[in-house]
Amino acid sequence: MATRTRRGLGGLSVLALVMGGLLATGCGSQEVKTWGDPQFRPKLLVECPPDMHQPDGMRLDPRTNEMYVAFPNYMMPEYAGVIGKITTDNKLVKVCDMPKHPETGYACPMGMDFGPDGNLYVADNQYFYNKDHKSRVIRVIMKDGKAVRTEVAAEGFKLSNAVMFRGNDLFVTDTFFDLADRPGLTGVYRISMDEMAKGVVKLLPKSQYEKDPHFFMEMHAKPIWLRNDWAGADGMTFDAEGNLYAGNFGDGTLYKATFNPDGTKKWSGVFVCDGRWTCCDGIFYDKQRNCIFVADSEKNAINVIWLPEGKLTKLWENDDTNGADGLLDQPCEPNIRGNLLFISNFDMPFPGLKNTKFDKPYTMSVIDISGLKRPE
Image (tube, rainbow, N blue to C red; front, side):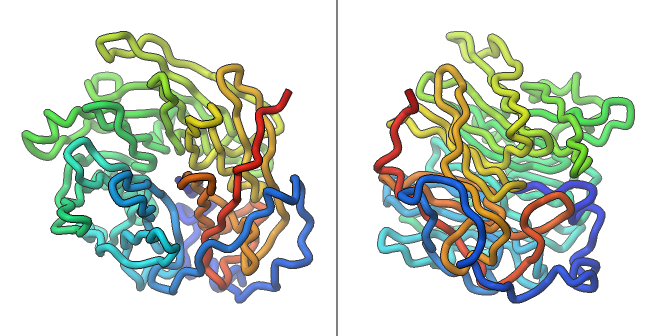
């Protein structure tokens, strides 16, 4: 899921971006420099309307094969955050509005997953509007493929980001802890369905995170000199054996956690740290190929981590573009339907990224990965 740093929207208002000349209509995508096998060149999946201009988290509904997409709409906040979906014939349709926070007045959906109860659980990232633990997880009650209502499932996050279930437990990345004595500290929380069934789960403040029974795993972001970015835990996924992987947006480090048979944590720590890879946004595990696809928002790239050894390869990269022909325009989230890799283009520039303009069109890309093979 895309995050924004203190040098991004957390410290620059949308008005400042407009006044600074970052809002534009683009200059085309056809002439940009690219890296990668031409068979994996991204193509345009859908062009999004203004009220769904900023795609982020995705999750496939296995019952319908429709891809649900979150639209926090930070760049034009006059449009409320919504959930949409891409139908089986690749039409983008709106599913529901997300509930606005009673204090900030904004709805900011990002990562999401279907729970064992069939409902959709969505991170509501309020960090760009209020950093004081206002972010939440929202439960969207689903019935016959339609959103019936929404309700708060958990609250007290700083920047709730990726959301994913492992059995009966919901895991959520929280990107910023903002502890002055521990800069770069970030991590993952775990909340059981049983506890959420009893009422809204409330996390402890970050100053007491070590005492919070929901806190699952520490991660530590290192600032990259070009971006001076402390953003931490972002994308998250699980492999076929149930191991958890979570990436740091700010420095690109991928963490891993393993579990005991009873579901308790066995081990956690750094899995991949490669100096060529300095941004890890959304990630997604592909069981068919036993690899993890990684969105690199900084470089307009999609990388591949091959399991179990953790070898890193690049699938595709391109220079700055408006995404009109489907090239990557600050990719923030990958997901798979069949042999197609769906990619959300977040298009929310800040210093140090290839992407320099928020511009039309608003797009999602797709890459045919049917020909992708494990490197020798």
